[in-house]
Length: 159
Ligand SMILES: [Zn+2]
Ligand SMILES: [Zn+2]
Image 1 (spheres, rainbow, N blue to C red):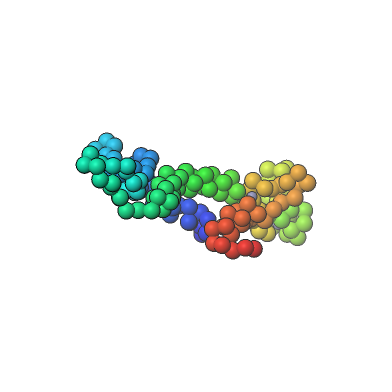
Image 2: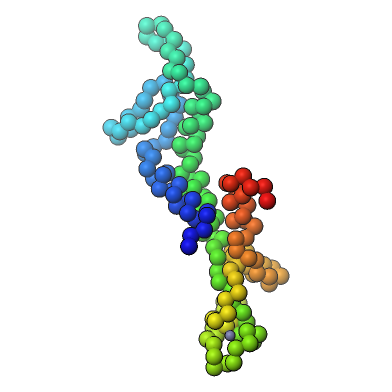
């Protein structure tokens, strides 16, 4: 089953891919790159038109700049968080073959990347591949502090 963060980021990645192409900008008129209309928050109060009248395009400048920033930075932010999540991925952790308690002919053992022989029949949990083992050789449970920090920032959970 996919975890919260992966599910969310995959969903947002799809939404980001559905946005019209090109960078958005705040301007007083729409721009049409490659013949395709790109939505531009019309906000900047032009000094004057050719007829000498001010043209108030209606939107609040701060709101428009926020929308433009969101449009332009939303896809790379999703990509950046996906890159973090891809590094901090869960790996299965198994009991050592020397301490699982199985008779030798009753289990499957394998050599883990750290050189330890493990029992494939004794899954004990999940660790973060990026955070484990740390300099002291300790394994850190997944979700690790990095993944939890991103998830909690997203959900507003202070823990
Ligand atoms: Zn981690
Ligand atoms: Zn075993």
